[in-house]
Image 1 (cartoon, rainbow, N blue to C red):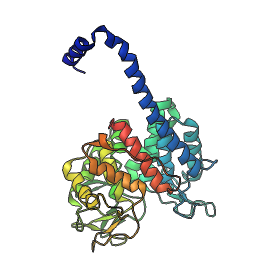
Image 2 (tube, helix red, strand yellow; image 1 turned 90 degrees about the vertical axis):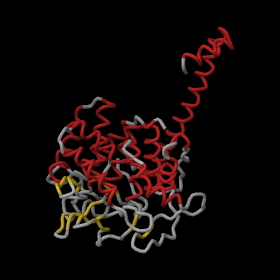
Image 3 (cartoon, rainbow, N blue to C red; image 1 turned 60 degrees about the vertical axis):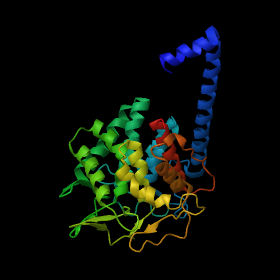
Length: 353
């Protein structure tokens, strides 16, 4: 409120405005409480459905048994946001015991009750989410061990997953299988821009800002299909192309890209335009496809999940994020839809709309 506004208010109400202030303060606190209670309800429902007593997150989109480093890291990050240290410690303990089983400090990407870890290759997004969650946990709860663990993971990411190419520093999706004779295969959704910003503060090596800039540059170049969208997996050859060893789709991975751009506040109109064009094509329709094929522009027959729809809603509303009201978590949603929706809500709260 400006000085002039205060003066006019005082002229209209005299000293009685002092009596009104507590009322408005109470209204503000009530509205804040309602928002916080809704967030807490979402988090409690998420834990009830996906967090096992031993501390692992189950991906019920994969036969209700699989756990992976991405899910552990995303849920650990959510637990820090909700100030739930007991849940965080349980998840981190399970993750260390069951996924941090390599010769380095990176995490095996997948675990099942029948086989445990059958493939020790890592997934860079899982490594980044876990390191990011540990950094935030240290700041919130002032536990030095969290920072020490985060730095061990961060250093191994920098040494083993960052690769300098003709396009700049890129992020390998894993230590094995992605640096190929025909070029490096990348997943652009593994560029967790808000995590990279905070990691760069904790580990001030020049590779981290270079990696962020390369990610932005690649998104400006990686335009495929009718809407000019990035593929889930891209080959960095003589020119960019959807990686032949994966479906040529804008799908469940790449839908996360605009969320991370918004979270890091590094979005531009040019970066968001392809996503807005695609999702805007289905604005107001009951059906929004879960993915589109970037070779023939065909679309999936399955409807986009509430989590994907939430990211689309944010992207289409930009720059007026204050207008966005994301739905409550639905108990029928699967793990991935649920975690995307909760991450979108955290982003909104941290941006202050």
